[in-house]
Image (cartoon, rainbow, N blue to C red; front, side, top):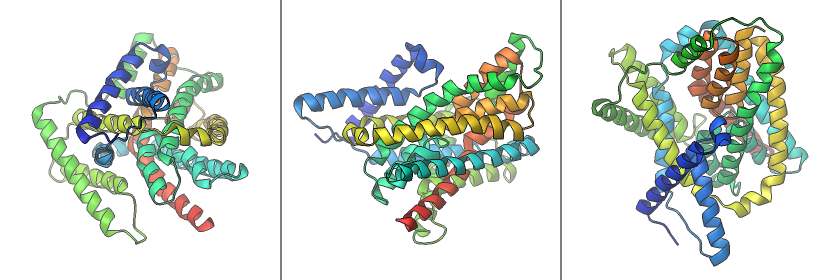
Length: 401
């Protein structure tokens, strides 16, 4: 059965509602910050898989909206990239950017290396590398279809979503134990729990005073569409050249450029909460559609090798946080908090990083440095570095084949 666009959108929203209800009433999912779209999409996919097995009835969703939703999300990341925030981060921000870039390289080398040792397609190792771990569900959804269509990796999207979900859970579980191990090596600040909570909360949610209203929504939608048009045009004209990047990357760059031109040339303020809400909405609907369309048959055939790669990646992440992130960030209390956060967005997503850091600061005291630089790096800088490195690895693997 081919499901129409309208019914596909309805099913995606239903999946989101199911996901919200399930996460709200499941402590494990709540504590590990598993996205509602992922939970709801998986539940619907499992239900449809059971129906298929019982009745041999197959549902084929209309995925025409997916590309638009995905590039809208990456455009929102670009629009949230304010150069003035980067300046405030200073030297620690530059060090963390270097650390994150090094981890991305390491994840891809490990993923491809282990895949080749297991005599699997090296592209699968790349999927179980920075595409889904440092990249999260957004990058999984962006690169998965490209790997299927251009590089012939069957089931790449399903595999990418599964890897991103496993990484998200592992990243949420890993941060606390890593911080407890490292905290023994440093002196911690002494502050009351209420002071710590308010400090973390204020730093985790900047610009909250800018309200979401119809004016801000219309302006933001116009900016998002502008980014999509410009990014799509540049991607089209750069095909078959050395400058070619996937459309979503050019849309991200267009967002960065537009945001800072409006800020510094036209002195126009931007409503970041509105950008966050619209970007997150686009990503949630996209993920729900993608996960509802999961092909469990293809996924099962690759489950064993991928699980091995993810386990190796988790060990590498733990060692990297303890010996690289902690040491290069200064071997102090701030470095402990950043290391816990790095486990979150290095294996999953920025919200997981924030949750990991808040777990540490609620017990041991605030870390203003960590809450300033980690959201910036995990929120948008990592996607820029990741996209460039992934493209390089794809070219290398393609030449090896």
